[in-house]
Length: 246
Image (cartoon, rainbow, N blue to C red; front, side, top):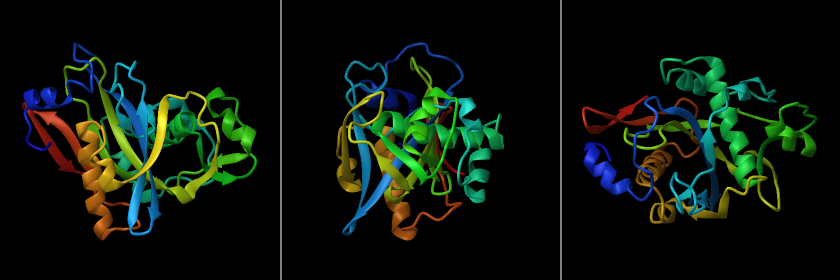
């Protein structure tokens, strides 16, 4: 997508996003790419969104959604790796450690709500926040140390909804519990594990395909996804889609 004009992006994504006069400031969002090694392949978890959604209807996506600033106050058994926290803090004019923590925890919460996967460690956990009661009920303490910041993308102008999305990844080993009936929101109608090469050929948004390509390339030289790795950042400037490295 690097170098595409706004018109080219609009044509490529006209079935993914509702076009129109949306909010001027993109809203913070967090997405989690779950990874699993199987033989020589690395697989990613994807789910299909309902065709009734205005935002990417019917597309395969990663679990995720809007960032809730109050998630920053949730207790965790292990914090973000310092190198990852620095990367997340360095994104945006309102950057702070609390905001970085909220982004990471929102990705974990959304993964529980949409996919029924609880990332953390078994142990006592209490909270008064309704969105996190599933962790308390199942005795799972949220953990952030395994998360890696792998990409950032800002939805171009002219969409009904715009997001400043941070794509995080985590290995399946960090999943402490998988609920048989999925997450409480059932927002994703179909969950599948796909090799990255197959996921890129699925019915996915253009930006998702681009980021999967970046992740596939990174894994060739950094198979464990060490903390502090390079993070591609996609955004529109001067009517051209730009790719920077954070």
